[in-house]
Amino acid sequence: MIVLSLFFALGYGTASVQSKMRQKDVEIAQTVQETEPALKQELQREEVEAFLMAYYTRKDLGENRKRYKPFMTEGLYTATVSEEGKPLQKTYQGYVVNRLYQDATIYIDRETKTVISQVQYSQLILEEKDQREGKTYTEQGTATLRLSYSETESGFLVNNMETIVLSDGTELAQGSRLDAVIGKISEEEKETR
Image (cartoon, rainbow, N blue to C red; front, top):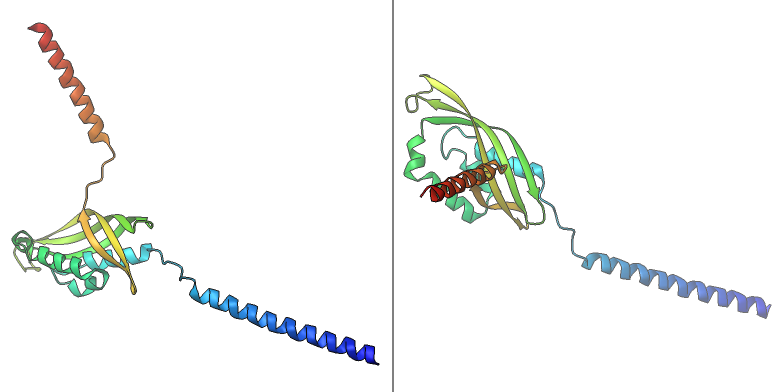
């Protein structure tokens, strides 16, 4: 009986120690999970397209500011509003209306948070300022932009936007051929002197 009591006490003690050790392991695992930084979010096509739609869709110059402001940093928003206030932009106000985003080809570099986007849009050109009932023309347009994003607590915001020109390199190849022709003509001129 003493041996049985001894086995029972030893088994109970071992089980109790193991239970407490498992409980500490769970607490340590929970602490490690809480202190690990959250996974970084990645910039998504949907976010970029939502900005482009808000920026390109407008009835007239500046009308869409409330829609695109939430997608921009304060500095870019201020610069964009300032650009819209320049005389060249104001010249077209009331003549270029009903701009509508149609589609975009979007390339995202998630590491640098940079986007290259080729945007297709349409807009209505009025012959007389603010006369939508008069003679109008529909124009299809394309713009290529480089957007740089900043990651904030609330998500990604555009912090720089610039118009760029994409090239397939044929201009350079043609320029090289032109340089070769000019070089050949120069050599021939030297020989004839």
